[in-house]
Image (cartoon, rainbow, N blue to C red):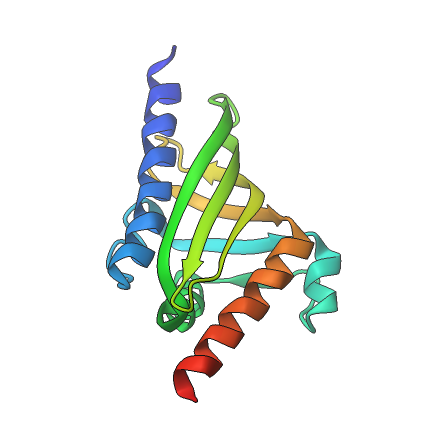
Length: 156
């Protein structure tokens, strides 16, 4: 295993650990730990974005993504991600990670969503500079509805 491959694997682990921490602590402090300051985040497929009223090329900055995650905090009881497999290309400084996200909301409802996360890394492999998350559109839409419902219940 090359040194760069190992560094990229550590960065992948750090990135997903930071996401779990964000929801566990309901704080975005760890959000940028494994990402560059100018990292972009996008959701795929484009049809999911269009179906939800966004342009197909919609991307979020670190700050915008943090705001999106914070909006879900009131609904969250527990969230944990599971890496099913990772494929790393050290030469191209990219990786694809298959993830399962196990989520329980404050109203007791739970869901597991799946996604494939495409990551691009800095030349030294220590930071993620671009993220494209190819999501299970049916379950993600269901999850977003569940979050909205949980927040409405809290505000009732």
